[in-house]
Image (cartoon, rainbow, N blue to C red; front, side, top):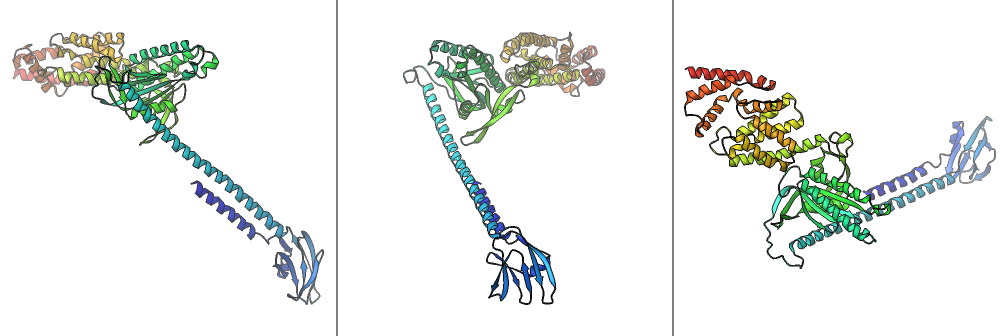
Length: 581
């Protein structure tokens, strides 16, 4: 591109010179125009030729006889200005006019040619230097890319070797590694304490090391609270990962939250030092999300080693990121952009993949932060994060129900739980509950029949017990767990809800009474009750029980009444007709 641009400029300069030459000779004129027939231009000299039968006088000119032309000529070598012309014809008629010379043709030519050559030279020099700089820049960029790749590969090889060896350089006795496990979505964080090496050379080295220990201790606590796995610390570098050993969808957001806490604590540490030390005391963080391989370093202590392209990229994001900020890759950005404000930072060359986008997180989105300032998450942020955790919780509980529920639960099976979870959301949306109330309702619906795994009688209490054991792992508060347990117990028959949320889950639990598939569902319930010895295998008696139950049943929410009441009474009438036949 540079060479092509260079050629175009040279071509324009040459064209400019040609135009300049073409304009030469247009520097004189006659008044009136009829005198032009007596003019010739020879050898860079203006000549006026006069026939023998005519006489011409020109004020201020030199008159000579040209033998070749056989006529008198007038020379104006280099003279400028206006000249009076008088012509006497052979008939004695006198014609007067003016010859106006505005510029010497030789002077004009040299000036224009000189300007054109000067312009060409300047442009040639400019684009020559520019091309040279561009070529050098490309060479340096390629060299930097090669050196970076070599450094990363060597660092990964060394770290992996150190992780596999003991203090003495030999494999530790009694340590056996398990086979590596591939995780599809893990968020890796590299944190580097910048300037720590320089500070340790000063007189306060012991205090600085104590502060670094405090920093690591604080961050260990933070990552544990956010379900993030600490991998290791190497000198002034801290490495952790979200999404292992327990897979989850929330790890990109949780790792970013941990990074914010890490930077905030670092600023707190820096504030204790003199200003001149603060300038070199800082933290640089890089985060990337992708697949990794992980395995136990020590099964008893649950220490992990991770490797793969994701680890390398996270390391490079940290190395090229901005000091004092949370730097993330494009893949992490796509997963957290709805929760954080992010600014585009640049590109990072990745081996075999091309360039990767880099972003810097500016803060929380205003609507998800306290006072819309973007500095700290508000309750809405926490609820939205809880809904992502709910997806992981739902996967765990539904899988548990599928594999652990007794096979003779023909009604209270996996399908029934899914139906209740879906119907709870439908009714709750129509009743316009808050987002947090929706979370509590869906969680209660998910657990309301889990007690059947352990026993048929008092299954609500057994489900409550399982919920209290499970929900703390998904960051539910004690107050939220108490409300969820109350909602689970509200489904105990006969229903007697004490508030709108309990009314919603009770209506969702008995939604089948007003559905078009009432008959096949009621047959499954009848079969289950018979198998568990709750009722006798008597269809007439069962129909009588259904008539009694449906006649006394009522939906508690306006939404359920609108959706199911009409069809419920139709089903009641069908059962009565069947019982009387």
